[in-house]
Length: 547
Image (tube, rainbow, N blue to C red; front, side):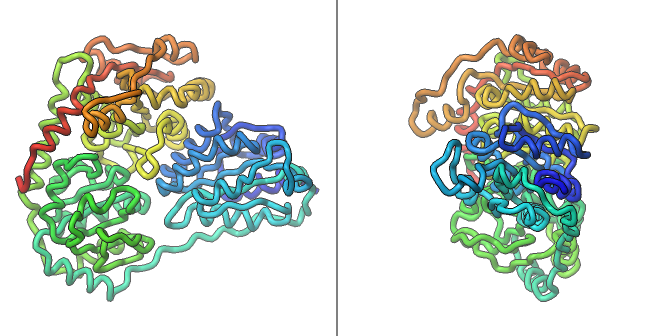
């Protein structure tokens, strides 16, 4: 005989789980002990929120559900934000927590809260394991739902008496089955081809679904053969390389950016793996008058600015190839594309400016220069995300990661740990504002303890920079946005990491290169000149189109 906890761990092994991120508690000691006796690594973290962020990034980078674990009550509640972030960012995740025993779950009791009701609205499925006999079916359902399109989070609560209960040795994990993507419908391909054949100025928008589907090669073939300009969402960055002559860059900035003028001129939008949580469609189709071809693994959300002419729910790579073969039209990329790329390149070149504090453009340019095409940068939520997502040239999918569905702060450092574990051959950098950094900076200890070399680049302005920026835009002033910071070099060194303070613009790039090439955890504090924020939005506001 074994316990429910041991059976659950066998099911996790069967699903291919290699790591569980979490913090144990007295109500799930049997589960933690069973993991320690298995082939699965238990990654002890310093906050359950960080555990969920780590599981989310593992899921985004591998396509296999990341797993996080917490005890009941406050532990499970701490984990909730990262779980919600995974669902809104379409990342597969399975969250497990303890719960009070069945002998007291029905009444007022110490640390007893209705966790399933909390998790239900932010997961694809949330349930309680009421019997050890149900574990094989519930575990298989959890991973199948988490990883199936559209991926997201699943939550299971395990009461402490159920966890420790004996189960039959005849119970075994269920056979894995992975749904195969549909082939594109020939009739829908013909309808989509008819829309393109009659288009005047079509444009492609590639989103997160294209990155998950591994559709980058097919997207490049499609756009190149038909001569179409391609923009990406923030989550889609890199699925179409920014150095391709048809690339327009990323759309999603809070102002009417260069890339938006490409949509202003378009009469047809070919959406490839785009999800509405990535970008309000009113930003690219303000009058609701553009014809839309929706390619995805699931039907489009209903929105008055996203009225789909043709929807194709199928494997994206084969859909793109079929549509390219089915249409007779070939387009020349409009001159607006050349102008957009020139403007972005000119703005990035401003990174040579020698002013101090360092201009955001220079931080972006030096970050790009220090990292290889396949290295990974995680841009935390805040002003740093706005600058990185719109300006950082990206060449491969999932190499510039943001939280864009929920836009949660504090995910980048925990996410960098998970990225380095999932892809140890890649160099990993977390680009964070000082506000976001201090939210989960305790995970420096986790990275040092686990000997995971990575770099944390802190854009330091002693304020919540993005909120300050938006207040200044909307109110003409800002309130309650500024704070003080510890000595970030000494703070990093207190955890056993290396600390660096940038004192001039010329110090940044060599410090980045040295840190990325080392085998240590490094924190680089770089003062940033956010006076550029208002200058940027003022400059964009003066632009008129078409160019």
